[in-house]
Length: 338
Image (tube, rainbow, N blue to C red; front, side):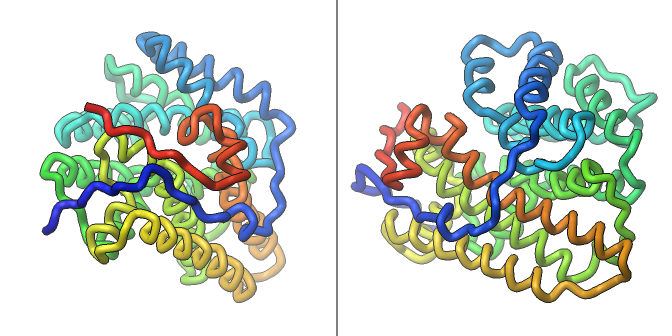
């Protein structure tokens, strides 16, 4: 496989996905309180987080993302979702610098904490944090939502493990393989189970397994994930990371950087269009289930619009320049770190 050639470009123009997304943006009325409490929970859970890491978490604004993606849920449910989101970003930061053995260790701690929340004990802080938010979730979540949450977390760790192996060997997968892997490394699927939990839904397994419901979740995952690949590309390229759809497209199709950004942007637009089309074709399962399904699908739409707007409000991708980038769509490329 040919190595990815560095681009001579000094800036890229990102696609206008915000205008293409016509869903209404909402924010949960408890967002400020929950955001503050959730960060305190994370910092207490891992007291060894240094000052730069804590500053980064303040700039991350994970609480705002949660409040935009779960805008109509109650305070206790929003708090669980926000704790999970901070925990997931913390996990993502940890795994970025880990080899596959380190990821396996984290996976064992987390999955044992989820499968045995009342009995499993480990000295790792992740054990206490995982058991803490999951026991709160279990109090009101349906058995189906709990099962889907645990299953998709398992998929997440399997995919992150594979990503670590690819990173160690400097392997860049083909586009089809990358898409399949990225749907799990994104961590989106457990967030869809949280839509069920946070809105007190009890949707039968056979409905959640319906091809249209699966396709709606997939379209949402693709939009959130692929747009994130565009928004995070600048920071990632400066670190030499290549688990990004833009790198995959450059490598596979021989496109220049801007053309690859445009290509991924068009795929993002198509994923929004696919979601809208699937939503029109939802079958009926009777009044009660249809109401729950409508709430679930609305929760997916909240994720699409919420994640797009949050990406510019957060400092994770564009630093303090998010508003300017949202307006101009111009991103000046960072120099590669030595």
